[in-house]
Image 1 (cartoon, rainbow, N blue to C red):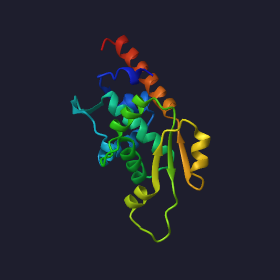
Image 2 (image 1 turned 60 degrees about the horizontal axis):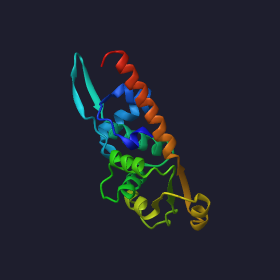
Image 3 (image 1 turned 90 degrees about the vertical axis):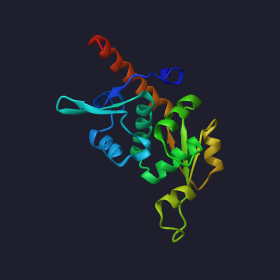
Length: 181
């Protein structure tokens, strides 16, 4: 995986991220940016003619890909926030930091294990996510699942997600070289 070896300092346009690299729909990326979810922000916001320009570095693109994959898997925002905190061993959910850590570990899968909340225990989404969510990087997936019988498990193919992002980045880089910048 190219991104694991050398994080490219290049900046990518908003439409590169939505159309060519991650494949997140424009309204969903706008929502992440507007709500400042998971530490996802545009690095450069300026005006180009009559349009504003939002750009992202490779770390942000990987974080957007991670957050989008977890969201598409059906996890709610509070659970995604808890997963990101568990990955980075921090109290702050930053998708780009979590994605870079996952790229560096090289684990092919991320497993999100969840207990069902006890009825009436709490109504706060953040507290439920914290009490019921844990993250694992399995060496032996069948053994992990048998040790956690009764928990729901979401197996996320991290290597595939990051490989697809790498491919999208390579395509954008080739197009930019052809266009002279």
